[in-house]
Length: 264
Image 1 (spheres, rainbow, N blue to C red):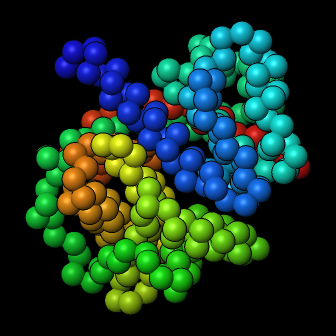
Image 2: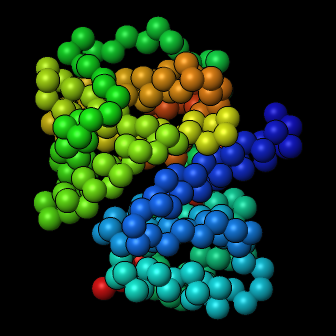
């Protein structure tokens, strides 16, 4: 593969993350910035993925630009997830963030797949039924899985419900819940941005893991995107999901560095 194509796909991966952050841009009291220096969202909810920064491009006064970026997070006293991607600047942005107290928590690979290569005949486990989240009761099922699968404190349920109910109105965000014999057991969410479909929030309840449910959720979501006309897919993989995504047909193109800090 030539370097130009590789660079293009890496940029698609990074831009879809920015699109993921943007789905909350119209939420009440949210602060959203998308310009030549960064993309950031600060919602006030106590979830770092809803309070994130990506595509930083700080070439001068780096410490001051970081300080300015952090203001809405400090005001809301929320955890922050800063995505450092291949095109983030400066190259030593991680060192600058560490001076503010940020810690690296993961280094997930960014992966890409052409959806023309997706196995559209993939067979789900017979017990699994996958539904598009379109109604309030389905939002409640989605949140139930999130809380169980992410070991989320119960007092954050209302924020999750508010977020997912809000996102029902956003055509760029599409959520799915998987049911195992009528019990909600898995989630997936798509962010549809230009020609690219990105998948996020692949979560399975712990007691249902190891049954190919995550694979089925991923394939079903991307099949939905393919049927809408999307031909390119991206994701950021966990260590647990990496080999699964490779088997589906994804290839690693880059790595992100996740830097985290919680403002009290």
